[in-house]
Image (cartoon, rainbow, N blue to C red; front, top):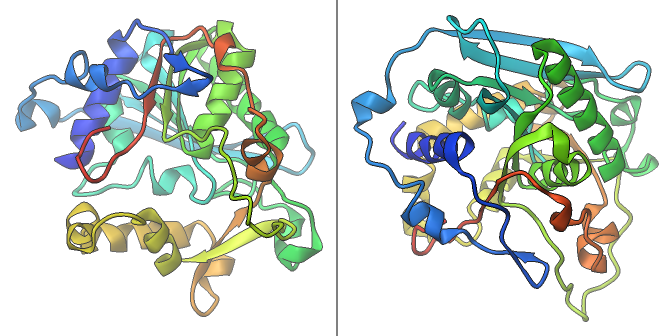
Amino acid sequence: MKKIGSFAYEIVLMLSAFSGSMAMAGGRPLRLMALVAGILVVSVTLAAAQLSTQIVTESYLIPSDDPGIQLYVRNKRPSAMTTFRADRTVLYVHGTTQASETTFDLALDGKSWMDYIAEQGWDVWLMNVRGFGGSTKPPEMDRPAADSLPIAPAVVAMRDLRVAVGHILGTRGLSRISLLGWSRGANMVGWYASENPDKVHRLVLYAPGWIRSPSPAAAPPAPTPAYQTWSMEQARTRLQAGVPSEKQGTLFPAAWRDAWAAAALATDPVGAAQTPPVVRSPAHDDGREYWNAGKPLYDPARITAPTLIVTASPSDGHA
């Protein structure tokens, strides 16, 4: 856990101690470089970061607000934890293509990001929007993708997120929770925090999207299908876009790539049985309806929780 452990530790520190507010300029998030250089940079020995803590794992389904649709949630926490606190409870929300367990709870070199945070004394949760991972795959996914509208538009994904947060708060007897979102998941938790400031303790937006200007010469986009399919090679190419070829093997070693591919395919047995194997992911129209149209999904000024925004710069190693 050399690479992932370091970043996860910084996130744990932010969730525990960061008391600043979301930085905005001209309506766009600022890269909070000072946090990495100051508050979040802490010297920790590898031994201290890998203290062994017995972890309890529970995975199960909860009903959504639509009949016949259930949502997959997973919880990891120290076995000795008997009381629960808002400042030690966090939910992870996945991005556009990959289920939460294939990113947040993917064990690399024996430990996942979720494991690491739980070992630091946290009650850690992940969820899957409908159609992803262990959540119910709507019947549209059994038909050609072009025959139906997108399965997971923003309003539907937000309904699923509200259900998951409500379940956790009710189960733990809490009034607030910290939220961690990656990519599209960052957009969802940002939206949730803007509408429910009283329920969010801390917020981490990991690679969030924002308003962008499409190329004037771009052709009109094709209709968005119900779901998308992607092979392991397509996903790997997308994940490493812009990374120099000589660094790709270091950033994404073959053993990690194989573990990730196996985990991703395991979330969709139907897609995995195709040739070549693929994963089917519910589609959405966020880009067309919001970001490319110059329309923000939410108003960041309404977020009151201390917030960390993480972006990447692969050429210089900063975030």
